[in-house]
Length: 121
Image (cartoon, rainbow, N blue to C red):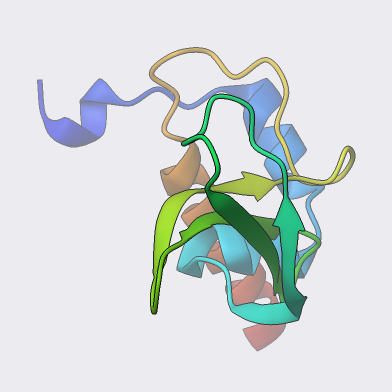
C-alpha cells in the first residue's frame, strides 16, 4: 500500500471543509499568522513553583479567529515558556466526527487548490 492509499477521505469531513471560510482554509493549509494581542498579564497557577510569578499573553491570528495562549514563568532577567496552546472559536473552525486515519490536512489542501482553480476560470 502506498502512502497516498493509506489515508482515507471521508465525505462528511470533506463537506465540512467545503463550508469553511477562505481564511480558515488558508490558516489550516499554511499555518496561522500570529500577531501580539495586548500585553502580558499576571496569572495564578495551581501546581506551579511556590512563590513564582507567572504571566500569560495571547497572540491572535491575523486571518482567522484562533488565538495562541502562552504561559511563562518569570525569572530574574528572563521568561521561561511553560506552555502554549491554541484557543479555538466555538463555531466555524473545528471539524466534527473525524474518523481516525482521515487525511484532514490533505483534504484541506485539496480544498484550497479547488478554490484557486475556480478563481482562475
